[in-house]
Length: 267
Image (cartoon, rainbow, N blue to C red; front, side):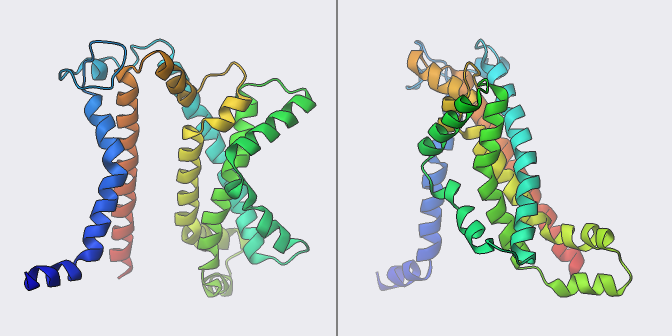
């Protein structure tokens, strides 16, 4: 018994980490399992029998793939807009000194700390006062504003850890400002930019509250899922969720492999 407690004490952190990881992945496991279910009624809440019907026809539910395509478009454009603006803001906040810099540093965290319903209602009020028609563009603008703070935070942390002597060395070797940025600064900041972009894409694709306030008659995938849950949950929703989860896992694994390969080359 004493040996068991010594082993438990040595591996307590690992065991706690594995339990936490299992807790986080449990919903994904349930979604994956029920994507192979064949329910007898409208609701896919209890296991009936194994079937590949939903995987063979993931667009079998009317308007589901249309809403999925719309969510992917909005998420892609919101990621591009938030990443470009957020990267420029992060570099400006870290590299330059100007008036109200401290205030901007504080204000940039407001969208992260503010409840989404407050931001959604505020944006809706703004769009209505401007006479804007609710739809694709209002959702896109709202998503860029929402994701911007997360991109700035991710990129800013990376830029703050950069060694300025590397850029100075490039300038000493007669590299111009553009060449220094493309050959030295951007590759070093790329992991932070990529992390911010992936976070922005996930937040935009998954958002429901801000979208629901500002979408008008536009139906994104989260709104479609919410509407379907009122009438019955089609198995195809689990299929799409499983596919998105697998894509995310593959992207993370690919990033880890690229990082390890770069570290080996650096050594």
